[in-house]
Each structure stands twice: as structure tokens, then as C-alpha cells.
Length: 458
Ligand code: 5AD
Ligand code: SF4
Image 1 (spheres, rainbow, N blue to C red):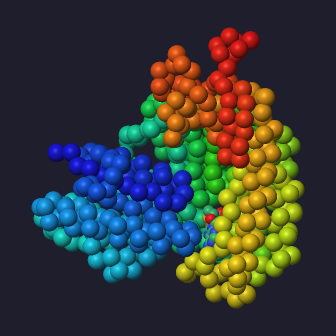
Image 2: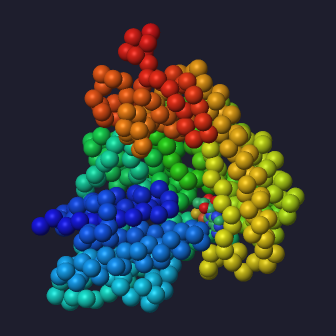
């Protein structure tokens, strides 16, 4: 009998990847993905621990799901409730004692054991609660299912996990463990499956993806540049991206990949976090503002039209007005196409959580507002510079709100919305790369028209 599975994904693309793999693992057990949790047979919250708000959200969501679980059980059914991901890894005990109705708690490295966990809970042992927060990361990748379900032409492929950088604000080295690169053969086998299932646009994922050093079947260690070079030569795939990178792990062949490999997109997400050397040191980032800018210059020399993106943390302990100004200056110098900025929040167990000189919340708020205003202005200026130009767009899905429109992405990762040509059946253009003339641009997206076949041929 078919069972309904609802997975809620919080946080990063790594979690989205894990969610897909959990669905793949549970499918053979009869679980089918469902859009709602109300009458699901299994609910998994795939959680994120990176910032404070992400954790709070988990507990409020658990409270919302609980009455539905009780209702289902009163009616003689069962709703297995699981907390997975990084909150589970970091606070598994707390979840089990604070939310007694949760059945399973498992970290990001153990979801390949889901069939065993489900069997224990539902089988002869009954009513046992499970906590599973080991770190058998190698084993996990060895046990991923052979089938990858795809929704649309864009796919994630996890090649590296964990981090040894130990930035003082960050929980990743504790929740995802130390850095691990998958062997190349497994990565290529998964890429082959994704392409066979229709993937045209593959994003290689890792917490520190450019630290990738996978063992190749040629006995050599492959870096990210080498891997991109291999995939660039494959038929079927049209676009390659990777995220997230660290400025200190940029190898020369990654830079030349952007110059020489036509499928490697002219887009780079390279977080800097702050523009102040004092703060970068306190964050243990191991680079300065200038050495970061030097890395960007190398990418720009290799690929002049490359678009940059970054993460910023505002209000790290000890951040003065002067430090914040240094961040604003760095942003002015770079001119980002997009960026993510966050107020610092102390994460339990990280070195920064014990630091003094905390920045007042209202100061953080006003600095964040200033930074976001500048970043928004930059994104808008860059997007508007495309008006009247033709861009190459990979269409990946219908527009989320307007059914007569399609959503796609430029090579620079900008979202593009176009009206579906009247003759085209819905979804027929998904997976195609077409030229679009840009007519309008906002901060978040470009708008335009698909060029006709004659225009495309001209
Ligand atoms: N507080 C605020 N932002 C954080 N990030 C990571 N840890 C914290 C924290 N404690 C941000 C960083 C990172 C992104 C994924 O999340 O900018 O690059
Ligand atoms: Fe966290 Fe990234 Fe620093 Fe690693 S490099 S500790 S994942 S912020």
C-alpha cells in the first residue's frame, strides 16, 4: 500500500540534495512524496542549524504538526515524525526530551540507514524511539540509491561534505563533520544517472566545494577544476556550476576552467563575510579583504563577464562602525550580482559564542539595512544593464505564481520570467536553452521575450 511522505527542507542546497536522496531511499518502501503533512504517514523535518532562527522554526513546526499526529493515531493510523539534518545532529537529545512525540532523530550522515530505522520503529520492536547521529559519511555515499528522481532539468550533485576551516561563527564543522570528498567514480556515476534522467544543468555541491580532492580511478587526486573539465566533455549536460567555495581553496585550474570550459557558467559564489581584516581574523577566515579581492581579480581576468555573489555577516562581536564601513567599501569595489547577508547570531558550541563586545541588536539592524540597500542597488544596476540585450536562458519550470509564464536562468544565474509562447504546450520548453531579449529588469529577475526560431537562426 502506498504511504504518504512529507519532507520539509530548511536551509541550504545541501539539505535540498539530502531531501531528494531521502525520497529516493524511501520510495522502494512505498513512500510517495506529498505536498501536505496533515495526513502523511511519515513527516521528516530536514533541519538547518546555521543561524538561530532556523532552529526556532523547527520547534514551532513540530508544535504545529503534533495535533495532526495525535488525530491520525486516534483514528488508528500512524504518523512517523522525524527530525533530520543539522539541528538533529547538534541537539538530538534536546529534541527528544523537549518534543516527546518525535519518533526519530537522525543527523545528515545517517539517512542512508532510514530503511533500518523505519523497520525498527514500525516492526516487532514497536514504539522504540531512535536517535542516530554518528558520522559514517563515507558509508552514506556508498549506500545512496541507484535511482535519482528529477524534477526539471536542474540537478544538485553532492561531491564534498563537511569542513575543516573552523570559522569561529560556524556550526558546519560540528554538524556535518570534517571535510570529506567523494571518490570520483561515485560522483561520475551519479552525474551519468542525472543526465540520463534529463539533467541539463548540474550544480556540484559541498560546504567547501573547492576543497574537493576526490580519489580518481586513475590513482590520482582530482580537484574541482579537473572534475569540471571531465564533465564539460560530456554530452547531455549544458551547464555546470558549483557552490559554496572558500577563497583560500581556489586552485589555478578552477580559474582556468572559467576561461576554457564553455559549460562552466560565468558565475561564482565566493563568500567573504566581512571587509574588515580585524573581523576576518576574529572569524578565523584565513584571508584578508585584499587577498579576497585578488582572487576575484584572477577570475575576472579569466572570464571578464563573470558575476560574483557572496555571503556577509553583520554585527560579528567587536564590529565597529569602521569595520562595517570596510565591508561597505569592499562591496562598492566588487559590484555583486547577488548576495546573502545575515545578522550574526551566536551558535552554541562555536568559539565566537564565547566572545565579548557583542554588537547591539539595533546597530546590527541598521547596518544590515544599509548593506542590503547597497546590494539591492548593485543587483538592480547589473540587471538593468541587460535591458535590450539578448541572454541565453535555460528554462527549468513554470513561474510559481503566473501559469502563463516560464521561469529560467541566465548564465549569470539571474532569474528570468517570460510569457509562454501561445503555440507552445505548457512545460514543452523546460530543459531548453533559448535566447531571450530582455525588456524589463528588477532586482530579483529579468523579464523578456523568447526570440522566434527565425531570430534565433539569424
Ligand atoms: N550567524 C550569522 N550568519 C551565519 N552564517 C554562518 N554562521 C552564521 C552565524 N553564526 C552565514 C555565513 C555563511 C552562510 C551560509 O551563513 O554567511 O556563509
Ligand atoms: Fe562554515 Fe564555510 Fe567557514 Fe566551513 S568555510 S566553517 S562551512 S563558514
